[in-house]
Amino acid sequence: MRFHVVGLGAVGTLITNHLRQSLPEGHSVSLIHKNVNRARQALWHNAVTLEEDGLPVVMRNFPHGTAEVDIVSATAKLPNTTSDSRYIESLFVTLKAHHTLPAIRRIATRLSPNSTIVLLQNGMGVYERLVQEIFINPKQRPHFILASNTHGAYSRGFLDVVHTGRGEIQFGIVPDLEGRDYEASFRDPSKSLEERRGNFMDITQSEELDPMFARYRSLRNTVAALQLMQALNPTWLTMDELQIILRRKLTVNAVINPLTALIGCKNGDVFQTMAARSLLSRICKEASDAFKAELVAEAQDFMNTVDTETSEDVLLDRIPEALTRESLMQECLRVASATKNNISSMLADIRSGTSSGTEINFINGHLISLGHMYNVQMPVNTTLAHLIRMRSGFVSGGDSVL
Image 1 (cartoon, rainbow, N blue to C red):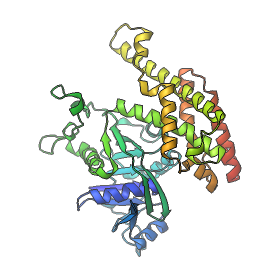
Image 2 (image 1 turned 60 degrees about the vertical axis):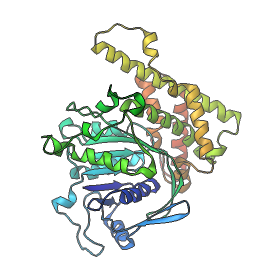
Image 3 (image 1 turned 135 degrees about the vertical axis):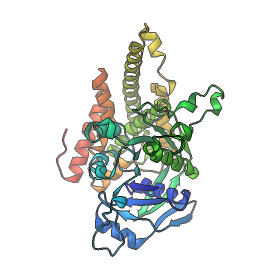
Image 4 (image 1 turned 120 degrees about the vertical axis):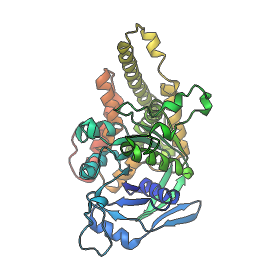
């Protein structure tokens, strides 16, 4: 099977190296570059290097290409345009959120309803934008896996990354529009709650037993590839579980990214003042209120479909402890301490002169959108978003759209 990776920064290089280490021979891992010249440079370079615990792990012989095609070799005059090389079965997307839509627009003609896309990035709302703007027809939509990554890494050169902090990759599969239940084994009554796990057989079994095997083959193999990367500590979760994880991570990013970018400090120094602690509390309060309103609305919609009378109190009981203000604040403090020597991606963008005004749209901007949707006031998140857009526009020398 052919796997592709787009977004070859620190996380993308980390994923690429571990994919190649974990997959059996016969499966390819192709890298998608910004342009043909960059792809040819990578072919000449012929290595993806990962340093872990002071030891280098060098993987070689990757196919390389662009969003449109894979190329045959470093000396080829023209890209390889055969139908086989163009088709993408499984695509790992490790781009920043605001770069994802433009990249997928370019790649979309290489994808089919049988393809699988893994979204691995900060922020929320990317999947929703993709299905609203690119994969509008549900019948022609690829499978999607949403994932959260907490590993730390930094690039020290072209396709050369250092793994600085071990975390985990947690993922869930977006529900099937045809009704196939990928999460059936999570509810297996014959097993205890602790023993219940996702099962490949819920995706598809075999070509002989499943007439729709071709439709689900890449999804099954992509989940298998994720689980083979044991060194990255992968966990398959239900989508309900994953949504809590993603909301908590979104809040951490909504606090640490803009505050460190505005102050110009490492993560570990961001909460040294009472002013910063006050902002932490207010951002987490706004996030928790937005999540609560969203979950209550979803619960109410569900109750309406089953024609069951319920009360506000019952609906509020559905709000998990992990999304309360206090729990979100503790998670922000924990992450800031655990990554105390790191600088946030937003601060790195501003220092490099890269506009991060659009990245903010998928972090604090996503919270602001939830506030608008569910009538929750978001004054602190709105102010932070404006300040980051102003800051990034000033540094890059361009105008930033509010």
